[in-house]
Image (cartoon, rainbow, N blue to C red; front, side, top):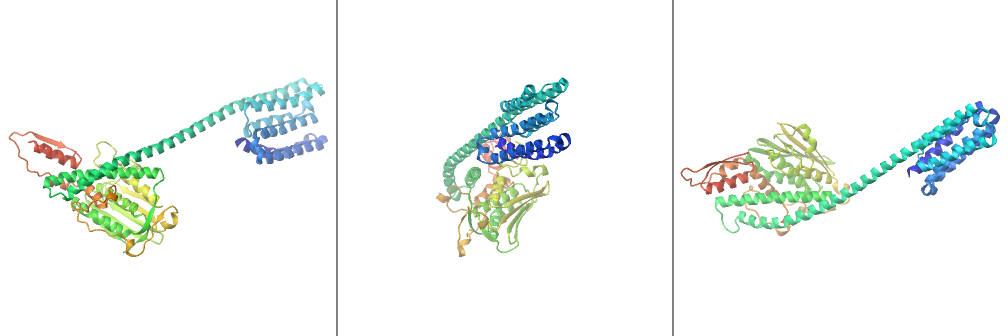
Length: 519
């Protein structure tokens, strides 16, 4: 393909240059003007023919032959001009040098073909001189041959090194393409392995969570306060593990481009109101105000409700995690084309140099092993993937110590712009999913349905976040403990509340005097 394209370029250059250099004929050899112009015209016609041949099927089948033909047409044409004028004394020999030098740049060939062309061109120049002309001025003869032969040597060497360079470039591109294909294959295998393993882990995990949920809800009888707290720890952390597996499975689907949209008629005011209602209890217990404000009573559009809920819940959980006091504001507005969701908190904020990295997978503002806030770094990455799948945009503004604001914009015509989406069109009251009143994370829940084993409700997400409430620690750890005289005093430091609580109970039951601190 490259040789074919270069042959076309060389043919165009020759068709333009030969008539232009024909002006020299008027000055140098007016007596030979007719013959020289006829020869130049022949070269132009031949170059035009080679150009169209290179553009046709012949160019695909014989690109190198056409390139060599263009080389020879121009060089041999100039050699004939040399013999039509003054033979070995003709200054037109410099034209042969010029053609060889220019063509080695715009029409590079391999070393063997270049050497063959140079041998033919030099033979066309020297054989008529030796056989038909009597050399009288040996200095001129030697000078012209020296420069012509020197040019040929330089052209052949240039072609040699150029060929080696092109071969290395080709090898590098080939190896890079091969490595890229291998990486793609490995990535697909990784995603498949990841999805299979996650699925196999999720299945027994949901089987463990379901009976724990029954115990937590009191389905097998009332539990003591301490038993209920222990079951709550198991239940919360089981949900956390299930949530992480679900997010990893989502990533595998995003990587494999298997995540699809299921559009239903959604009222974003209801979605955000349900979310803020669920998270309001845990926010109040943490001492954080959660406020919701909507510009209109209803803001409706065709959206994927599950993914919208994931976006809102992950942003709320992120704001809740990093806000120890102050407020979290959820604002919703819309115009004719877009729905805009704004979630602002008064938390610790994000450094400017980390703003671009927060949407990357497994990235956190503080990635050290001694970080204060737990998390896998998947939540915001999931948000970005979901928003982009919804043909929306997300941006973030933050100032360390003064909070963070996330701005999500979603199109209202998603049913038109998303051609591959499944659209579930419903009428009347079925458009809205009725929300059950929520009374906090400790309230009894309905039994987890079989088809929803792997799905986490918003209430369960809120329950998971309740473990980060520091005020709960003092209440939960006031457990009567029969201390022995001279009991060993143990100080236990741990950043995870559930682990602090469990170790506290275990050591207390074994007669130790325990003090706990957050690490």
